[in-house]
Image 1: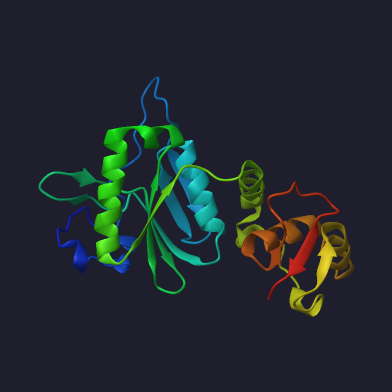
Image 2 (image 1 turned 90 degrees about the vertical axis):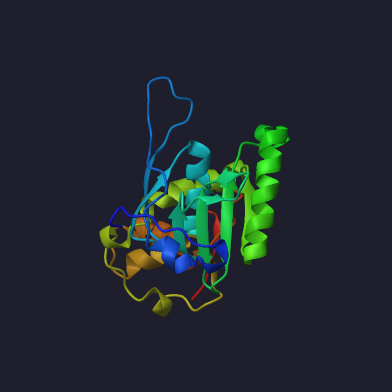
Length: 223
């Protein structure tokens, strides 16, 4: 955070060190660039994370939505040996303490020999460290559309203070979005749809996000 850099064997690097650091690279923009970089406010970290393309943003949204992910670092570090240098896109720390290193690449680039070799090398390096390695090229379009929509309701601080919704529905209850909104409205809340969508984002309600969300979509209550 003070602008200094540290160099150490990868075996000694911990997720805690990475998560307490700033990104290795900052956002760069220029006229005519093909990618659209930016900053994303993460509900998981409570701060902004950098992304270098819309594809990276999509993976970042899924990580922020995943209740198993408790830490996210973007452009986390530089790893190198005598022949290669590599900056992964994301480090994810999961609730069980495990670490996943994510590299985001368009599917067509995976056919490029240079790219394939670089990713294979990175996979070996991170697996030797005991970290999982994921090469991500996209996900179901409807799932991404729904998560992108729900992300608009991720900031709990700006959501109307909620009643104890576990008192409204016991765990395991299955009901439609319309029924959930009606129950929350009956509990005295002004914006029931906003509350339902926030509960979906936070994982307290679950729906099949590979289908379009409508008033008739079924929800399962999770507590």
